[in-house]
Length: 147
Image 1 (cartoon, rainbow, N blue to C red):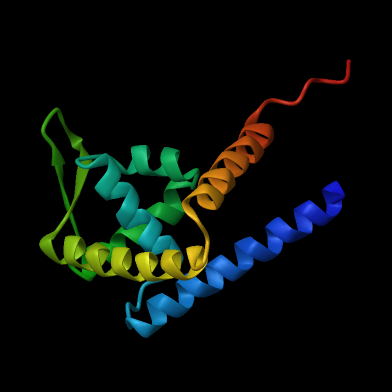
Image 2 (image 1 turned 90 degrees about the horizontal axis):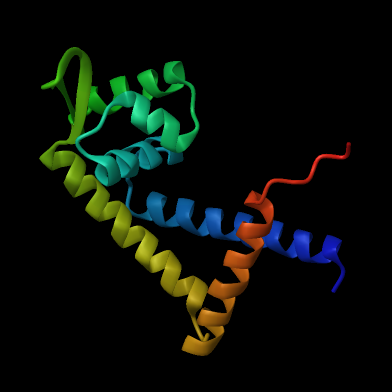
């Protein structure tokens, strides 16, 4: 398979996976966008954390994140409190409603993952994981400069 075909296959896989996730979210009537879900997951993973830590992890600008956090706060999904070490910064955590929402998201994603892995053996899944990690490593490795 040529490199172009491999890239096309990967592109189609990524889009099929995203469609499956969006379908699962819609079936669950989550009423959250992907950016909101990613923000909630980042807070869960880093909690307690600052908006700067989330912006860095997700590689988003602070203005975009501020709008998302405002929306999530207005929905009661996150708490924003002054940081104990610096009252000028806000510390972010998930509310009980935010934790419950992410439990629903996790269930949706589990269903999509089950569809993705249907009829694949453990060996095939392990081989896919290893190959995907090699591809990720290739893309994240700095390219040599052409001096």
